[in-house]
Amino acid sequence: MEFETKCLHAGYQPGNGEPRVLPITQSTTYTYGSTEEIGKLFDLEEAGYFYTRLANPTTGAVEEKIAALEGGVGALCTASGQAATFYALLNILETGDHLISSSYIYGGTYNLFAHTFRKMGIEVTFVDQDASQAELLQAARPNTKAIFGETIANPAIKVLDQEKFAAVAKKLAIPFIIDNTFATPYFCRPFEFGADIVVHSTTKYLDGHAVQTGGVIVDGGTFDWNNGKFPQLSEPDETYHGIVYTEKFGNAAYITKARVQLMRDLGAAPAPQNSFLLNLGMETLPVRMDRHYQNALAVAEFLTKQPAVKQVYYPGLKTDENYSLAQKYVPNGLCGVISVEFAAGKKAAAKWLDTLKLVSLEVHVADIRTCALHPATSTHRQLTDEELLQAGISPGLVRLSCGIENVNDILADLQQAFDKLEG
Ligand SMILES: *Cc1c(COP(=O)(O)O)cnc(C)c1O
Picture (cartoon, rainbow, N blue to C red):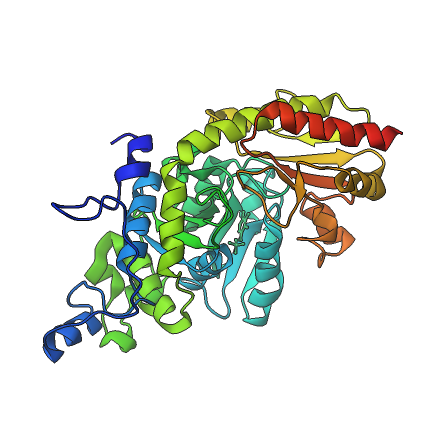
């Protein structure tokens, strides 16, 4: 099946007389005829549903669809993108381990790494993703267990050189984990560039309608966990009578462990209703993304012509410093999100935002409705000025998320706000 077809048909193929639309299995539990059958499920001897925290038919269909879209061997849905990133790393990192991360990442991920991980005894080194391979390797330690970045960084809108990160990961025999939220698998499939694990906030484009929060971890199935660095996967798990994930589950060891161990113990499972809504959104992903991209490109071009604007960050623009990286990694289109820096700084940015009418002020991005946000006073509010600059955010930076309205209406609203700014 081609990508667009998978968006509609992967994960759920009804049989005779079954619902055409993926049904919501709104049930926490599932019945069996004997204790022996249930016992087999608990021993991981047989696959099957027994409790919705671990697996649910509606969520399972969505997981299968996302794995198919990314080209992975399996996926695990979580209750939010934050939970997905957390579990993806906690699945292989423990106290005393070290992580290398691009500094251009989502504010919530930055907080998780810089503060919560530190409390857990996991150290993180933030690197400039534009540094050379040799410089990136200098950040490595004997206890480094993963390298992390975002396909298109939120909110800096920088494109990651994935092959460079993959090469660093290969040299260190560690996985390259990438957050593909802003590109979506429609525009970029990081497994094709050497990523090992993909995470998403499905709250954003995969859903697209701003109706559910969710996350997903996708396993590429190609990383060799048996290299001595990952005993969590290659040595017995006493909580399952000593099973060894790499032996029992082969190339699905990582994603199976995340489900049967982390989801069992930590429990950030999505609601079946939310999985249903996410599935509805994904059915139209390709159509929406093409329009987000067309609108954003037109808006970005318009913004570059405004005297009040100091800089527009959108790698679809030929003048953007990441244009050539975008041509390589996201050649068919980009997200709808643009970052705009106001020449007169924070006050001008705030005034412009306050006069927008159609475009709403929201703590959200990647919605079908155009929305805008001021990171320095919202999502990235907890960061110090120094941390803000390291994450590519200046006080006058506005994150504009272009929706799928008629672009003329978006442009007219932005124009009237610029007119008021000058007046
Ligand atoms: C929003 C976002 C997250 C966090 O996801 P939630 O669903 O809000 O928990 C992680 N990464 C990126 C790139 C995001 O935009």
